[in-house]
Image (cartoon, rainbow, N blue to C red):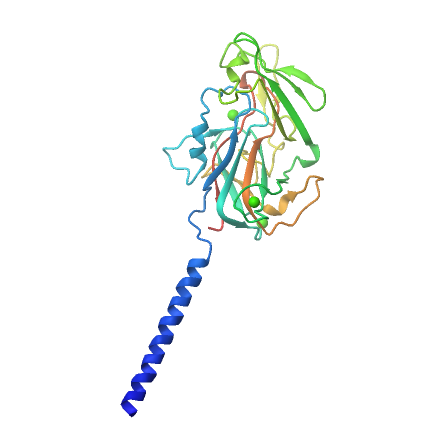
Length: 294
Ligand SMILES: [Ca+2]
Ligand SMILES: [Ca+2]
Ligand SMILES: [Ca+2]
């Protein structure tokens, strides 16, 4: 009898152990699985007219997914307005200080892109909620709610023309990299015009040319924090060629600060609209983003 009772108690203990074990395992399985600190998916990529139009392939989006290993190339965003929309496979938490970084073309002079963030508010895993701009040091000097409409060149020997939301008109000046800027129209853009909406930063380059020599330079104090592909930033990690971002710098469409506990998606957009002489357009090149806490 005593022996049986002992056995019975042991069996009950064993059953309880199994039950708790199953409970722990099933609880663990129900947590969202974090597979990567890096970008896991691209939701959109459009190249803005610029000199790398024939190099920039739609399939280059793979260069922005995962770890930026040496065998990977770049994702060319092109001239003003070109962008990529990407997502992590988990929420990036807004903790103290920097939260994520955007990896760019290492060592190149600043060609700043603005970073926008979006929480997955409706929880469907898609970037169909609200974008918030992350402000940087030129926030007060930027044009928000700006757009540029580019028009495909009417012939191979013509230029791409444009107009903007301030009724300015102009042309992408031919010469560098090709005789005519018609070659800067992205083949994947099948329409005859394309409009890019976004915030425009001040010009990056100052024209310091003399009659004898053309010389353009980006003053070191122009872009000091808050932009992608910016080696002048105090947020720059020179080892990786990355700029670090704090979700606490998010602002809404009116420019007011918003408190976002986390984000799921990012959009990086070329934010300077300038042709700097022979240097040509100021175009952001990127190659991934990483959650700094994973
Ligand atoms: Ca933060
Ligand atoms: Ca969503
Ligand atoms: Ca560039």
